[in-house]
Length: 360
Ligand SMILES: [Zn+2]
Image (tube, rainbow, N blue to C red; front, side, top):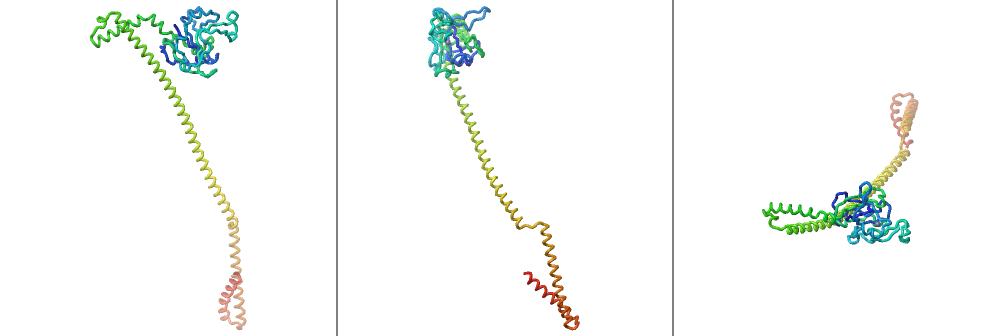
């Protein structure tokens, strides 16, 4: 017996992998855009062989009678749902009639161009359309992966798929082979550990019973491992989500700190602008004051020169005035030079005094 999981988006397993019930093996998909998202699962009892000797993994049952479909496919309802807890509703159910040509069930089998009794289940998750896209797909029966399609093509409307050879068949055909090595291993181990030859003490039936019990225990353990694996996947998904949230938060923080430094820059810019404005105003004021009160070098030279001339002018005037007074004293005292010489300094001082008074 085999399980076909089809229309997948992701395929997490490869040919040769052992898969256990409950193990996440892929995700729900659209068969590379050919259908609304759902997982088609069926259980072929065997695969037809092509002319080239290869198995026809993609065989389907268009035009087959209901009986023929049941001969080739096992009832899928006895297995757990591949979407697990995510399962919400079925598309086409087991042996449900459908005409793929008219995409309806209105045209009867005899007149339909592509009539079919659906050989498996079309599982959907919650919501309509592609709301359940990428939902996890779990293994419904332990076994070995014997075929996958992971490409981007139509793959005969199947899209990405996984085919698992279910354990039952293995166990049935290999039961002796599976038990015998276990018994041999047990005998060797017990002989080594306890020095007891287990084979010599127990009948063949008892040995087989022990081996069967051990096989069951191993199976139970495998089941537990599958559950734990599923839990671990859930936890790691949560961890991923948390990490993503953390990264987003950090990004937000970064943006916030960027905002802060930006506002700081703006504040600094404003205070600098204010300072520049006040300095400019001060400078303008100084320039104005300089214009009003300041003197250019040329002006200074002109001013100094004028002052000197004025001073020189007044000195000449003083001297002239004093000389005149001295000459008048000389004439008045009948050409007495001694008196004129005595009057001159006094006249000079007097002239200076008068100039000062006039200047004021
Ligand atoms: Zn289907």
